[in-house]
Image (cartoon, rainbow, N blue to C red; front, side, top):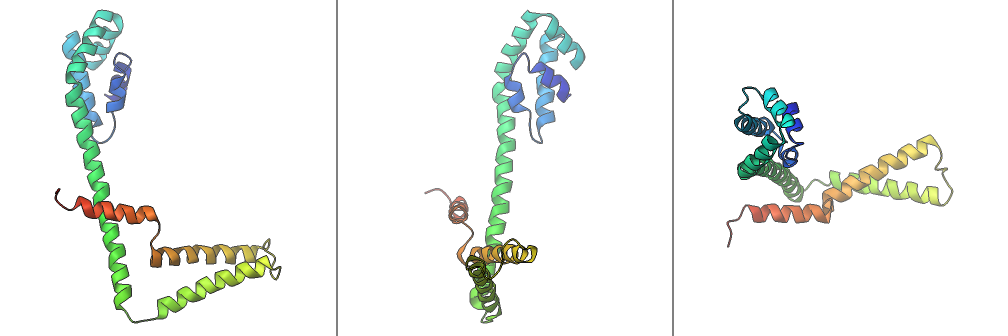
Length: 183
């Protein structure tokens, strides 16, 4: 059905923008129904052939689609809203997980994670200074591997203790506001 609908898009290009997501088949079915109703054809292939053969029918098809455009756009908008809601729910769950980990970290008196963090950051800084001051050649495979590993772990430690980005904090704030009723 979708190949026929994409062929029908030559008569009404706005169709191509509506055909996406999980409801693409439903939208495609409605577009084909409009084409069949306008042409009086029994099959989608026959409707396409009739529109290609008769410019007047193609114009009627365009007019009929304009009348259905709001309904088709609403279906596409409902799909997009559902995708956004799912993304927001997923991000809210992830934000809750991060918050839970931070609360656990604050409540636990075990210094092992902090000591490991200090050791990894210190190792990274020590290796960086050793390379900068010529004590270690950075072009060796071992030095490059160690620097790469330590820098990746240092980045994770900083993200854990201070948050990953300002965008992440803003996203968390927006999610928190999304859960509140409007004022």
